[in-house]
Length: 145
Image (cartoon, rainbow, N blue to C red; front, top):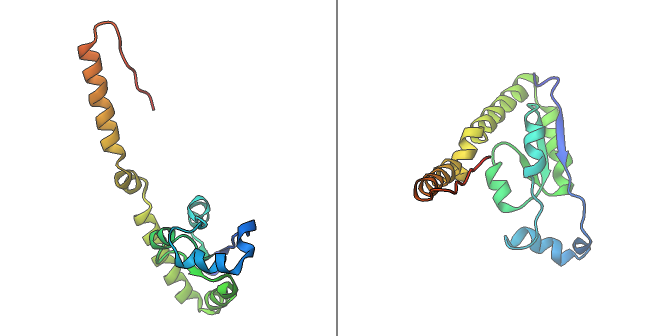
């Protein structure tokens, strides 16, 4: 329940290039500039049915996780934390349930595989394997994954 759930914060470790303030500003304004990705750690945290507040990330990550993760500048993370902590238990539980349902729907393994075109790749591999096996008498290609 929301009373006992955790609030995780993702704060990016600075890279040497980021010491330049202009580089930091460009990072958020230019989608081609080097950006941090939330992907490797977000699923692990969110599978615990917890809140996640993150420092700004790559625009594509922010779009993927919109409505599930709070993205803010590092100095505003505490404000979001205080807002979540300051909510009533039932209000926080409702928000947590909404985010959890959105996460489960959007990042359902079958949905991820469908968006990635995995079935199409498997079908192509099967067709290539069938063609190879039926046209070559002594050579067979076995594809395992």
